[in-house]
Figure (cartoon, rainbow, N blue to C red):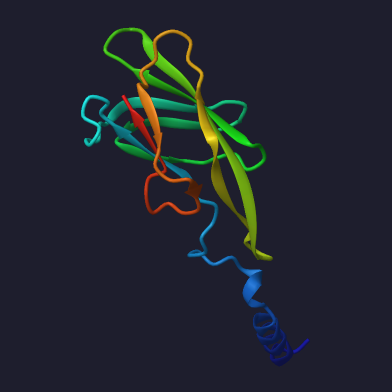
Length: 160
């Protein structure tokens, strides 16, 4: 094969890619649930958590230790619920732990061949169960939005 034919073949291959062969970086995917942490004594104020360990139950992934007043965590798209254990370290040698189960219904939207599907979640009427044995650190939970389709605002508030 001559160098000219190789260049011609390369140009033909370059222009044969279609738009949906590549998932562009800005394409919105499945949104994560944004949790806002608030002070239970002053509900209008945000309240940071320190060294919060978030573990996905019945999942292989463990989120790292977190400090701050809000976090984005994924929901499971292969079940009708997602369950996390939220463990807060304290000054004492004991840890405070709460197990939170979020119930949701999932709707998938086909984006294109390379990006696949995007999931939108709708929280059920009884959208959570706080499954804590003993004294936990979560005082109340409030649903801020019914639908999880983007990460532009908070979906859930945890008062502690």
